[in-house]
Amino acid sequence: MKKSIVAIMLVCTGFATIAQQDITPKYSNEFLSIGVGASALGRSNSIVAGVDDVTAGYWNPAGLTDVKDFLQIGAMHAEYFAGIAKYDYIGIAKPIDDKSTAGFTFIRFGVDDIPNTTQLIDASGNIDYDKITTFTAGDYGFLFSYARKMPIEGLSVGGNFKVVYRHVGNFARSWGFGLDGGINYQLGEHWRFGAMIRDLTTTFNAWSFNLDDQMIETFQQTGNDIPENGLEITTTKFILGTQFKTNLVKEFYLSTEIDLDLNTDGRRNVLIRTSPVSIDPHWGIEIGYGKWVALRAGFGNLQWIKNTDLTESLTFQPNIGIGVGFKSVKIDYAFTDIGDASVALYSHVFSLRFGLSDPKEKESGESSLE
Image 1 (cartoon, rainbow, N blue to C red):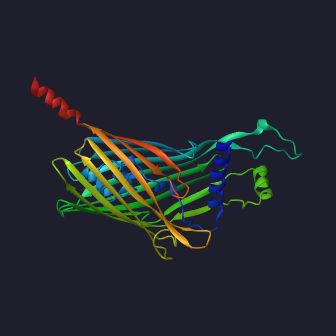
Image 2: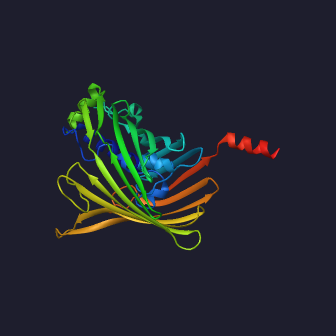
C-alpha cells in the first residue's frame, strides 16, 4: 500500500509539472542533476574540477582526457523511496589518441508497476478491480561526449550532445535535445580548476499526450489541469570547481574540492538566493592511500528552513563514502540523500569502475616472451 501511494504521488507530481503553462520550470529534467558514481556522491558531488575517469562524461567531459585505460567502463545502481524508484547509470570512455577521448553515458530514473486506476469505476459507478493495470514512468538520458587536450599545457575542453527521453506509461512522452560544455585546467602539481555548463543552448523537451476520454473525465473530476502538447525548456546551469590535491606521507594523499552551482532559472531556496542567479555551494574531501583505498566526506544542499516562529535556519546535507581498488577495478560506496536534507531519505549507493587493457599490447607481450 505504501509503495502504491508514493508511486502515485510521484506520477501526479510529474503530470502537474508537465501541465504548467510556464515552459521553463525550475526543476526540468531534474533526474540529470542527481549525479553518477558513488565516489562523487560521497563528496556531495564536488568533483567538477578533479574528475579524471569515465564519470567525467557526466560531470565534466573535459576530464575524459585523463582516462588512460584502453577502455574504461562505469556502472551504478541505486534505489530510493523504499525501492520504489530505481536509478541506473552506465558509462564508457575510450581514448581516441593521446590528445582526445570519446565517451557515452546512459542514465535512467524510473518507477515501475504503477497502478493505473483511471478505469476502476465505469460510467455507472461500478467498481471493477480487473480494470486496474500498471505502467512505468521513466526518464532516460543519453550523453555522447568528446574531449580534447589543447595546445596550452594542462588545458582540456569537452562537450556533450544530450538526448533526453521521458514517458509516463502510454499517456505522455517527450524527446529533448541539448548541449553541455566543459573545461579543465591543471595548474602546477596541486591545483585543478574546472567549469561545466549544462544545457548550454538550453534543452528542449517536446511533450505529446495520449489521453482517452475516461482519463480526461477523471482529470476534470479531480480538479486537475488537462495536459496539452507543448515545449518544456531547461535553462542553463554553470558549475565552477576548484580542487587542491597533495601527497601527505609516501602514497597517502589529501584531496579537497569546492564547487559552486549557479542556477539561472530564478530564485531557489539555496544559500545565496537572488532572482537572476542562485548560488549553491558544496564541498568534498578525500583521504586515500594510492589507488587502494579512499575515505570521503562532503556536505551540500544548503537550504533555508522556515521555523514555526517564522524565523529561518540554514540546514545542510552531509555525505560519506569509501572506495577500494585492486589493479584496474574500483568499487565505491556512498551513504547519501537524493534530495531534501530535512526529509533525510538516505540510501546506500554502490558503483563499479574498471579498465580494460589493449588486447594488441597483451598479444605483443606474450609474443615477446615466447
